[in-house]
Image (cartoon, rainbow, N blue to C red; front, top):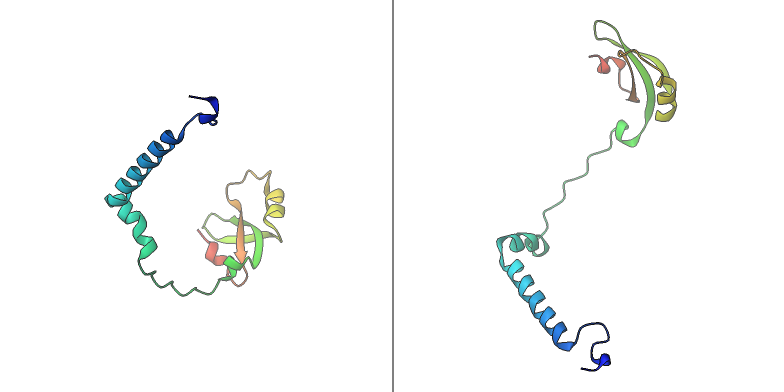
Length: 116
């Protein structure tokens, strides 16, 4: 064979063999149970989407970041309030008290909701 018969390292017969094998593999996959399940979502009617729920204050990000301390009875109290999580974490970074932690407080939630 001449060098220009196989410019990319394979000839026309090699490509035909590859295409035939690929067709057989795809045919076996589509005919199998896994293939039917994979493709059934494409051709079945879509299920109706659930109606979106209104966003809560916490989901919209309306609130503050606070350093919360819990007492021995499990009651929570706010010690400091911050606009961003980063500010709250920076202020709290050297804390060794396990009863103090940083939490997000959505507007309107009572602090007593954080009681242990």
